[in-house]
Length: 299
Image (cartoon, rainbow, N blue to C red; front, side, top):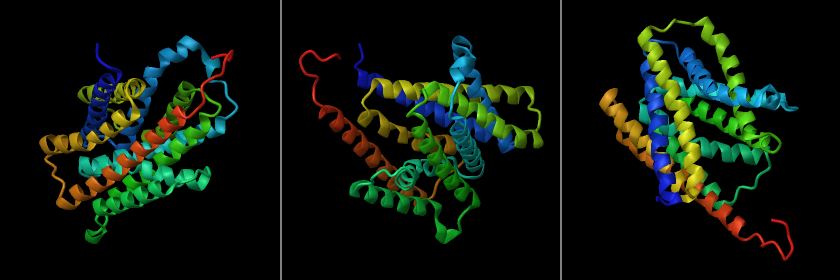
């Protein structure tokens, strides 16, 4: 019988492989189909996997008094997805992946500015170091590629989506948040996608199905990884996506990051890994410091 941490590690390895493969499939599709259309396919495919849950619980499960906040979450998430798809199409796959990993840095900034969260010294230093690594990857001395700016914009939008989601979790169940996100995201992307629509061929529809399979299974694997293993062990493995993206980019798309990209990637991953590890340690300390229930207490 495998220990919970071993199961968590195995689920995370499956998750990072599936999610990186999803972007590789997207990069392949975007060679012949518009970025907006592929983004819509990704959102709609994920929604299909939630239809059984919705049918099982009934439409009443979607009743909410926070429809406006759900819409904002969908808007931030959909536009972030489009930005990341655009970056994947126009940048080296590994570089687009590492710029996506700046999400924790932007999330800290947005949480401090808009949610009043206190940012301690260690997180502040790690965040500054991470932004320095981001600048190294972008390489402004060589002229910033527009796609790199779009990738960073996507990371900011994803951080806004995460911040909005965190606000929603105070009153809304997780599955309802996800379904509203997918519905609003698909609606937001549908209009522009129809405007540039190109009907996929039979082979491309197969790739679209694969896109949905990798994306949905990757999210499922990710959830199970965190449910089984300790966050301090499982979360850092998410950064393996950059390495896997590098291999896929090299062997399939004939891509090779330069020395600046390697250096910046190391800095970004190190800072983000420290932030994740530090937050997990603080959370564990907070849980262990809570007093045990006294005699006669209801547990």
